[in-house]
Image 1: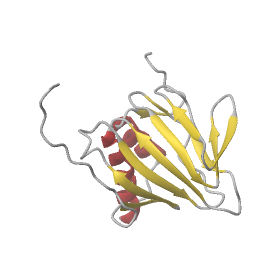
Image 2 (image 1 turned 90 degrees about the vertical axis):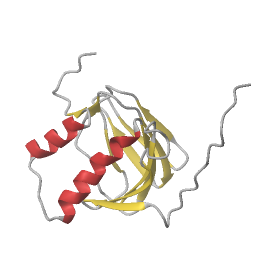
Image 3 (image 1 turned 180 degrees about the vertical axis):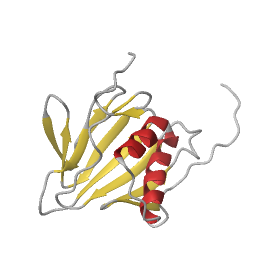
Length: 160
C-alpha cells in the first residue's frame, strides 16, 4: 500500500459559501477548486420564478452536472426541452449546446452544479463583479468573457 500523508476533508456550509449575484440569479460557491487541485467546483444556482439562465452555449473543456434540489429546471438544447425536478440530474459533456431556466412562473428553483475544472467559477465571479460595479456588458463583452473560459455561442464551431 502506498504511503501517503494525511489528506484533510472540508465541510462547506451554506452560511460560509461565497455569494454572487448575476442578474436576478444568486450563486453560492461551495467549492471553487482551491481545495481540489482545481479538478472540480461546486455551486448552488438559485433561480427566482420565471428566470432564465445564460444564453445558449457550449463548453470546449469542461463537464457540468446539474442536480435539481428544489423546483423544476428546464434544460434547453437545439433538439429538445427537458424538465428536471428535485432529485433529477442533468449531465452536460463538453460540446453539448445547452442552456437552462426556471420552468415555473410562480416558484423558485435551486440547482446544485459542478464543473470541471474548478476555476470555471471565476467566470461567475467576473460576471458578478461587472454587475456590482454597475456595468452593463455588451453581447461582445459577454462572448469575450465566455471565450476566456472555453465557452462559446452555438454558431461557433467546435474543432472536435
